[in-house]
Length: 378
Image (tube, rainbow, N blue to C red; front, side, top):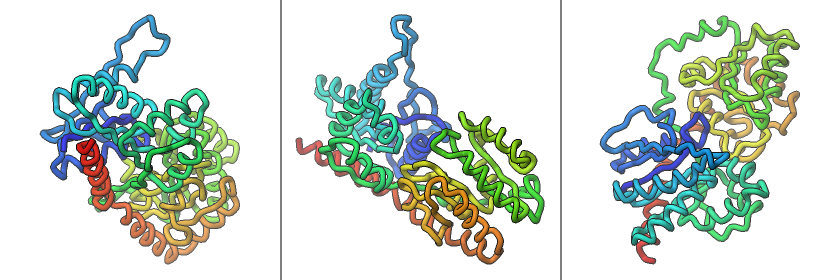
């Protein structure tokens, strides 16, 4: 198949998933065309089966905000005709599904039929999509897609609750390339980050309020009072500076490392003993899955799709959102006993294997084939 993929090209989960999906599809013999405003951060190699087409948005003084949706629609039309793209897979309802539908209508005028598969990732539904200004457009885009997938059962339920959806929604979960998390390096240089007797706790996110960054700090504060420990904070966002200030006020700034965005996530997870994800909500919890794939147990909230990934008492523990005391107790119950920690690390990796990319990508291929077959019958 010739597949077009539209996504955000940034460090966010949806962009990472879309990029990894496209790369795996190319390995399986499909021709993949990424269409976005910048080369995706994890798209390292272009080749015969992987192509990138940049969406340029001209600056016009007439517009207060430059019309990306218009530029994307036009680029999709051009690329579909030039490369005979058979199906377009868009990640995020707004603006991508909306732009794809406009491209589809323009192509239809020229006798070209373009099926659209839309994957819902989370904030396009629960945050952006539910806003009164955008709700009608999101609902329209979902219902006009030829196929719709959701990354978790929880997100599917939220979508059906928030919108009047007439389309079917298939749950195709996020995934992980287990092979990439089987560390090839013999020494992950743990000694650079902590002393031998110190446990390493890690958090990775975009540091938005929904991630509850201060809860991470407070839980770590409780942990380090009981056992020697270090905290690795990876990411950038509006909550980073308040988190740094909280560390200073608690007197633990020397035990917390703020990395900013990093391309060495695998190495950081390699020397981690515990991962924390106390989010207000998560449509899936991809960061937790990446940690588990590296054999790192997870302390998390029980919100959204997280319980579908992190299994309580197996790969880690779940707590109510904001329950710092329970999270601290659960973390210490894992970290204080080396045998318990070892067991949880093994179980976390085994749980992650259920989401192996080689198990999930065939599900997307089945969606494409079903969609193309259905469209050919119209």
